Image 1 (cartoon, rainbow, N blue to C red):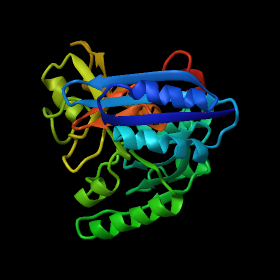
Image 2 (cartoon, rainbow, N blue to C red; image 1 turned 135 degrees about the vertical axis):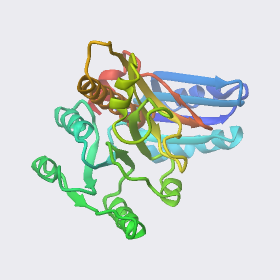
Image 3 (cartoon, rainbow, N blue to C red; image 1 turned 120 degrees about the vertical axis):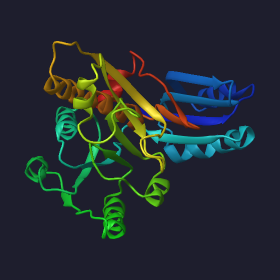
Length: 294
């Protein structure tokens, strides 16, 4: 049986769920999991449906059949084959905790993606990446060559068919043009102290102020630095008895977990950009195992 995921966003109105479920039933499909959200503040409706085609209907066939429904409700509608893994490009500078965590999750099958390459402006993790049989691309970035460096990056993205870029502690600001070109397809991770404790050594600054909670935020990248729609966040409690080094260690753990969860949600089509916010449907208990194994 073929397995698919349908994602829908459109103006809210009556009959959307009935139209979708009715079409799937008529096509011999069985709904496995369904989530929906009606945003009364914006008048937008969001829905994600995971289903099986018991009669082996193809993606193209189902897509064509959905066209009249999409037109009727002014839908942005996408249909995905659940067995196809998303092609992901990782980018890193000199902090490797997120990169190493993602490589491990990928290696054991906990993060079902195809890592098509790792891009870095340094050589620190070249050996680690190559040892995983993953292409490593060194793209040096300076004030003088930034346009050329981004052009090189986009060449790599296009040649590899990259569908998602993950900034796994990549410490370079992307241009507005690149952010717009890859809108909704770049995820970044950073500490959640912002807008406080900007600049170097944020965890040390937090320690000196006696902060009691350390957090991390994963978000989609926009032209507004560190202000894109938030996908995932988490916190860890710290006490006066812990050192600045402890803050850094705890912060790295939180960053790694938050980034992995954000990627997991994106690759399984559970995220929707809703203006400056996101709608993120949870993985249901019945669907998590199939999501995990791709």
